[in-house]
Length: 74
Picture (cartoon, rainbow, N blue to C red):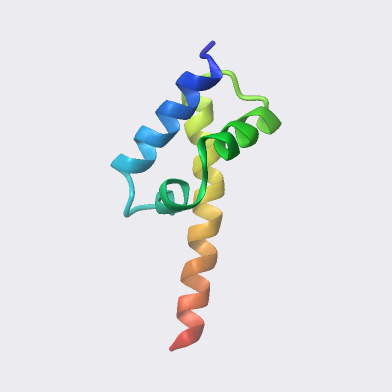
């Protein structure tokens, strides 16, 4: 079991490493540590792997929506 600080740090590091894929830029650009912590608390995750997966699902949904909006523009 990881501490909340460890999970938030791991999520942020993963987001930076994957900035241009899967919507991880939302995590880097839009969410504070406190917001990430709140997401993880609400999800009840206790491991780094689960934390990255949980935030990743949200990033992917936002990225999917962004792609849909961009497709409508043209």
